[in-house]
Image (cartoon, rainbow, N blue to C red; front, side, top):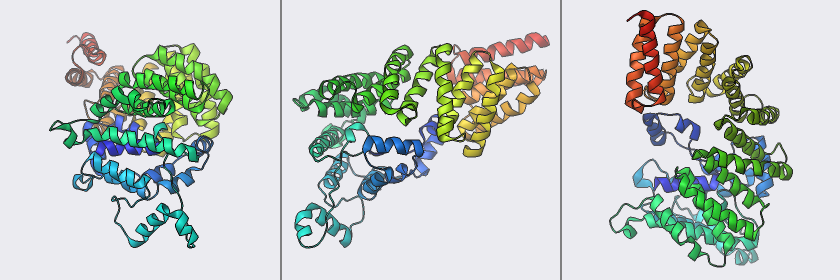
Length: 481
């Protein structure tokens, strides 16, 4: 049930209830603590966190302000989503069917069970169900129509879209209700299995309605991707693209956005050349249709640069990154997370091409900003700390590197785990630092520790384990042990 709540949250807001980068950078224990103890923002509150660039893009795409959509989410949809994700299992919906029924009540302007009922609340719902009759008596009923769930975020505003939105929503409800134990006949049916079953029948469910099928497939592609099933997401994206091209055309927003999401799936699955091809096709179209400063254009530009970096295409990546860094600095400011991510990628390019003097000021600037905005122990701050220390190791400035690498190592072990890949990478870096300082006794002790931990985490054939073994051998060779 909790997983269904997270999916609903993602569909309504376009975001996950917890910071995905922080989750990925956390150890298992910290991740479990966050989910069990940290209270996520309500969906309506998430929309209040959009920055200026995101607000501008949101208004262009949805035809209304985030504040207006916040008003629509506030109340029933907040209550429904947060009940599904309640920390107390006993207070969640008892089954997917109960969640589906409450969503259907919302669509029908009936009182939902996810909040304590009151006379005023029930009267307001009655007014919405019977708005024309109530209006004749002097009251006003406001129609609140759900839509756009198939595009992952937002609401359709046009009257002729209401049927489509409701149809897509009902199909998704039916699909996810397959995880209900009553239908499973004693088996534990997962959301993955429900998605797989829907994927086999979606074509038959929308005969003669290709646009609806495209919306459903796009949503399924998103869900598969978010759960890490990239091979299953790809065919859903591709079929949705085909249907959108047939019904809307190849240059419409829905078609282009779905192609961009396909590119991200390809990149996350390690198919960087295929992702690059998709991004290179889309980028000039995004610039022409939306402008170079648009939020989605800049996100696509970041993905294009990343696809180049993954393939070591530094000459192609550099101009893309330079332009991206300049735009995000101008639009967002030097403390914004997206600017810092772009600046860090540019510094990474400089490191890989041995342009250390150009990389260092970017790394210093990124570290200072992350310390200021995120705090000393945020995983991204610790990554920046280690990156700067690593650069100074490469430049032979071991006395300057030592406090940085040690700070990163201690921080990773505190907020993540001693066997987390970040911590192991920092431990190998610390061994190199101690070797540079000719503190061989401690270097050997740390190298032995690193080899043991790397082997336990990765096995003996992993590159990080081999690096620890090489460092230990070099220490013993230099000391004659």
